[in-house]
Image 1 (cartoon, rainbow, N blue to C red):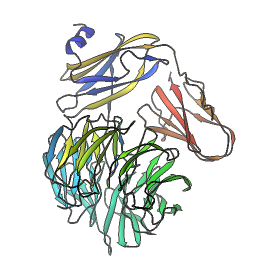
Image 2 (image 1 turned 135 degrees about the horizontal axis):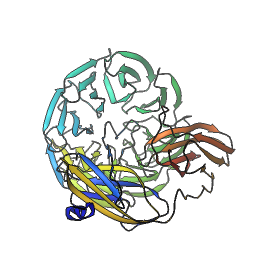
Image 3 (image 1 turned 60 degrees about the horizontal axis):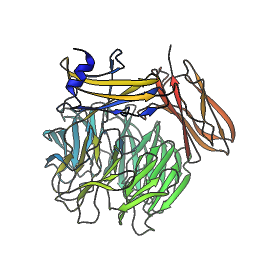
Image 4 (image 1 turned 180 degrees about the vertical axis):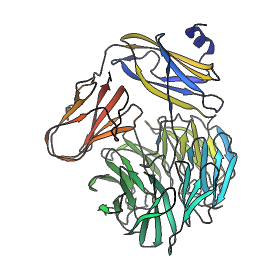
Length: 560
């Protein structure tokens, strides 16, 4: 049977192409193909695309695992997963309590990991059914989400715990003495587990432990009690403290690189978010700040509550905007460039926000009366859906992965919203000038089980982006085979970041990050990643950030 006829018979049930868009006209021939696949909650054996009747090509699955607090080590709170667009409950599991349930769920490889503060038990649950796979008594209350990395679950409780992610068996535990407890979500990187320990109400101790043995590699004492979480990026740890400073530490030895003490009384529960050389964090003084991650200098600040009440939420960052609610009366969408308000709507929050599919999800809380899960349109703030739980409020932060939203209520239930798992497949697509016909098909057991088709038009070749009117950012040659030069002009000196990203938004390499004088600058990229490995042929985005302004240009790598 011809492939096109097979696709028409299968229809679109179970598979939808979201990029390219049906009927759209594109000015360049390097695009991306993205498909969302439903397959009875099972990952298909393969997903294949075929353009204009040519040879089939495998489309790789995009992992949307939410492996730690706020999705990743940078705490962006952003997922490339599709999102549930109504309040359908997939399942509930009675693994929470009715007070003080701050922990957010973490989802990796189809397993939901959650620690109930009230029960002091760590759970692993099936992401599709909510069935408990294993549980472990951690013997103490836990305020923060776990981190799952390289087959282990890392938990901060009375001790630093490391459990096997599949069996729940203890791998190791470490308990410093004396002191109150471990606090904050652990950060994991390069085989090291970073924990914070609070020995008293005025100081914090940071431990770097071997991730596989629990051996202490280094530790440092710092002034200021902490209730926030460590943020980790490119060998630097960022630690917020209450009645103290925001610290940047060398992750290799714990040495302080800079401190920022601009927030009156510091930070309570809000953690720093790292995006493109900037940190974003909410303070006890009710002020949101954008801080230069390299220098520690505050580049902008926005007073939202006039000191009436602190902001506990960690702001999620997506689409060059920040999303969070205060504990007074408003949910905010701010520009990440200068903190100006894009929109503001009613909302009260203690936990943090999760972003997926242009939807902001959060738990209504901190008013002791209204335990709602809410979904807002990221562009307008309009309520898409809300769900009233049986609890008085929600302190937990959500996780969104494979089309399902997970969040803990204070009515004894962990909630999963959605209709089932939806898997994302993403790759580069090299189209032809003129009319194009694309078929994407999923296979199970060697048989095609679902397919979708789109038709679109391409009017030009290569990258046709105008140079930035401020920086004149450009790449040459473009396309290139071995090396391209990225050039730009700064009108004034300042901290600048020049990096290359793939079409999924993953940072491929950093070409420069640091202070630059005004004038002309140029840097070369040879098509390699951070470890010197060759990246594949495809379309990449070069992004320049300087002085709070961001500009991009496309780069097309064509290996011979």
